[in-house]
Image (cartoon, rainbow, N blue to C red; front, side):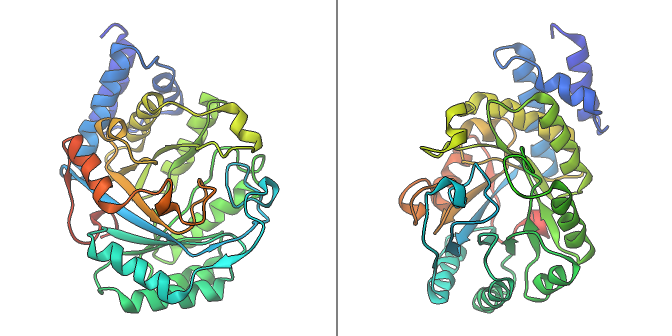
Length: 333
């Protein structure tokens, strides 16, 4: 290694010590076309292999509705301000159940129900309970919904959800109408109700500073998730943020590996999205298949556009020489 301090930081992470913010910053600052970057990515893969026993997971998400959402997250196709979708539509419960059952049949390790922030919470609970009843008892069900409080968290748990996906996103409060503290309150509510948390450093854009990447990584680590990771922002044509472009998969692999090192050995999962072999080689051990609405897509049925299916996700992991877990998600066990 040319720069001993970089190898020392990587060695520290490999030894099971948590990295400080300035160390995470230094690792993120390394150019991707260097020996050091590939060493960081090797280390990320090494830790992911160890903590997940060499097995990657494929989770699946079903979008329940489409709505011009009032939270106006500039990176989201549902944002009212982006004008992509002007009408509210909701997938029939029978179709939602059928999509979830199909994902279960095809071997998804966990199934997520996602809705926009303005989706009625009681309706979501009814939907989750119906899906829960239709699936095998061991199938892991996860909620991907708007912020919620302690009472709602307990209802999610009672409806059969094992956990939630939730993130304090990059640009939260400036690129969105959501106060960052509200996201943190939801983390706490989920934890108190016994819901396991999956999170991510997302959506990463070319304009985001290393300081913000570090800040959000440390927030995610403090939330004690079962997985973290990194995902790039997908530009939505005609929107304000599209002008910034997109982070390359090569750069994202480096960021993903640094997040893996920063999380330590207590976090088994390391996700990235959208699924790609480069990320899997650098330590990603979680991909998503998708059906229905998708906040990175301007089409109503993402499986006909950007969305990836279970078999394709599994094949990407195989190309990166991962074994793929079968049965319920070990991350949420």
